[in-house]
Length: 122
Image (cartoon, rainbow, N blue to C red):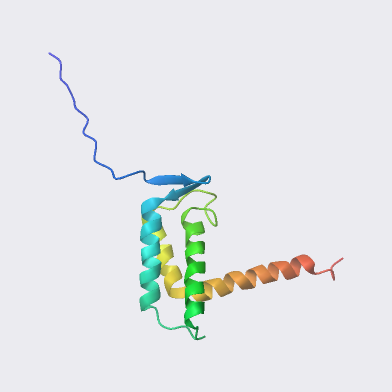
């Protein structure tokens, strides 16, 4: 007597990770993190430095670029994409403290450039 087993596959809507230009992009994680970023930007308290509409749009676009790099693992994580949960946490965190994060990144880059160009030590 033979027993037959049938494998039932769950229906899917598409691949979990899509490779674009050599970068693995987690589709659900990126979509949820972008949603978290945009929703957090709406309910976050206003920053101490007032921004006009153009600056708000530029900040949001810059945060979306940074979020893409983080979620795909290109900024942190050595190229390994984040899971959906951690991606959402990053999105909400950047949505609430985006201007502070961008200013921190900028100050670190300026410090690095100053250290590279400093010739007093030679």
